[in-house]
Length: 229
Image (cartoon, rainbow, N blue to C red; front, side):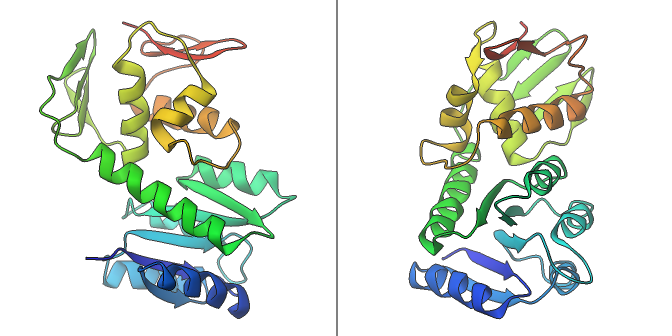
């Protein structure tokens, strides 16, 4: 069964162009003109695998749409942003977007990003029959896709879990950002390495961890990150 994609953009030409390329690649695609309609659609029928979402839209912009969406859904989101709006990209990633594509873009790039995000989901949810990773204060159960911190189960997104798993499977090893991108996002990732910093920050927040006094994830200045065994 093909994946269902929502393309949400107030510019009909861009919306139709992206939708046509996704449709040609075998996806089921639905076009929507604004964020408010997208939220209503997701509340009514949450049968969507991924949303391609423009950031700059009237009424309800993409950032606020993601904020509201994350209150009830973990559906994957790829943002469409203007090339100059770095702040939009960073805010979008911090509130729960999975990736972004900057305008002007090639529709083929959007299709490639969509495939990469969906492939990452498939990898992280495959049953591997692996032993849970147990450390002081935290357990990472790969089979159950669950994390327990101080006897409390923590709700992580698929991307956060994949990032934590990549670090925890090699405790003490320092990972450069590009190495984490290869493991978590895949080698066909097109974006900036800074995306790792944003998602490590979100992961720390979910775990109740701190960059200044880390329990689980330590920053190695000038290099990257490591999991503290």
